[in-house]
Amino acid sequence: MTGERRGSGGWDSVLAHEAHAVAPGGEWRSELWRVAVAQFDAAADLLGLDPDARTRLLEPRRAIVVNLPIRRDSGEMQSLTGYRVQHTFALGPTKGGVRYAPGVSLGECAALALWMSLKCALLGLPFGGAKGGVRCDPNRLSEAEMERVTRRFASELVPVIGPDQDIPAPDMATGEREMSWFMDTYSQHVGHPTPGIVTGKPVVLGGTAGRRAATGLGATICAEATLERLGRSLASSRVAIQGFGNVGAVIATEMAKRGATVVALCDVSGGVLAPDGIDVEAALSWVAENRFLRGFPGGVPCGREEMLETPCEVLVPAALECQVTAANAGRLECDLIVEAANGPTTPEADEILYKNGVNVIPDFLCNAGGVTVSYFEQVQNTYNYYWTLEDVYKQLDAKMTKAYHAVYETAQKHKVHGRQAAYMVAVARVAEACKLRGWV
Ligand code: NAD
Image (spheres, rainbow, N blue to C red):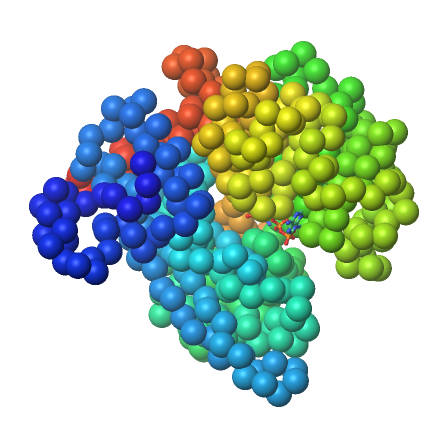
């Protein structure tokens, strides 16, 4: 299936007469949307979902594209493009991250928004999915430029976001700093402090204890549970991690704390290998001082692609989408892939991994710790009463463990792999909500 089909035969035949017609769903065309549609269709087939429910569930409810004219530090004016896609309100207001990256597009945001809906449904959170971002190279923007981009983007989104409507959060190249600017800009527009407009804020501005580490911690909880199921442990595992940002750095720290040997790390600047183990604390200090891993003296330098093929028990893609493909899946030397990033594995690679007996913890289960603690943050903002770190971690563990077991019981019952099982659980929940609302 491609991202181009959808819509009833009636509309298809109407559009077919138009020489320059865009096929239904053509707006979302992108590699990530192709991946999302293929995965969704496979799950919908397994569930026997009827065509109306598929049509209702797949494509986003709405999207906004905004032009952001930004004054560079040089004095020059530059136009950037920003996107926000809201997938479905079936389960509640929408929720999802904001990323700054050169590849951000409408189609990429659409796929990520669909995955956010499924992630929230899987974790039992009262949200639909959304995703947004600005197409730019954040590594080439100064702090002042990042602030101007964030404030301008927030201003443009004011009409379509709100604590009861759509709640942004951090994603690639955004964090507490950007969420603070975002919240401040929104609050200025509406005329009163609105901490619940975003999650992932610093604690002093109404953030929650534990948000910073939540995604990485959730992925580590899933990895431990899977290894235990396989009769192994993190303490006896070699781990390779692609991406050393918000998520990858926490996973490296948490896994090392649990006794794992981190044998490979990489970021956008390149990788480092050390079969006897990398000192994660030293790598963190290096990046804090030098911004990137390049030049880190604690191992042998290696390429970004090469590190994925490092012999290890656990491989953690924690950077970009579409990193494990038909081209490299057969060469991976790991037993378990912990999908901390969104969409790191293509459907073609999935088949190869499944045949080769490589276990995969699917992304929207694996990295759901972030949105789960974001939900706790929103609950605390609403009540204006704040939890302890212990409360947050206890609730996070309970929600991740429950979702993990729901996925693996479904996998066993239907004899499908983890990703299909996660889709089945999540799609069935969103479909039920649509049906109960009378939408299908
Ligand atoms: P980040 O910007 O903090 O870190 C990204 C890391 O990837 C950086 O170390 C960067 O140098 C590296 N990187 C970029 N391009 C690369 C390349 N070509 N090869 C190797 N490394 C590269 O982003 P993040 O918040 O850690 O997000 C990482 C992934 O996790 C994304 O897919 C994101 O959608 C997903 N995710 C993040 C959260 C969250 O809470 N931040 C939650 C759920 C999912």
